Length: 154
Image 1 (cartoon, rainbow, N blue to C red):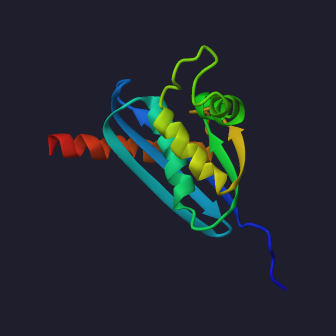
Image 2: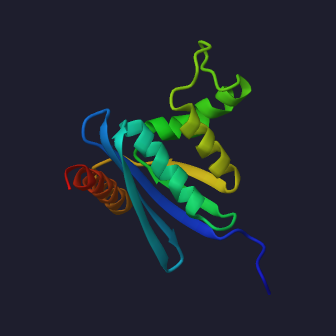
């Protein structure tokens, strides 16, 4: 008998910056059953919020089919944006309540597109508090920063 339910995936995503703005990195762990994949990358100039968003976008885009996703992040910005702000921004033409363009609009729109393909549940975890998935995602994000710095000074 085949199941019609979407595969369950757990994602731990984090961003990091050395300076804000400054060299930035993002990292993520994707887990499904016994499978685990680590992703990371970076940019020479970014903000922490941009890297937090990028970690989630890259994670969701790495999924090859529609999944049921439990996303864990220590970013209130990402949590609040996905749960509360984004629906209103979309209704208001990607403008805030005071009619200003949404900051990081291109990233939010990319996240919106990536999230639409999945059933997404968002979970906030306290950062740097010993949560294994979050700690590893933070290590990967910092690895992304290191990679950028090595290219810059290499």
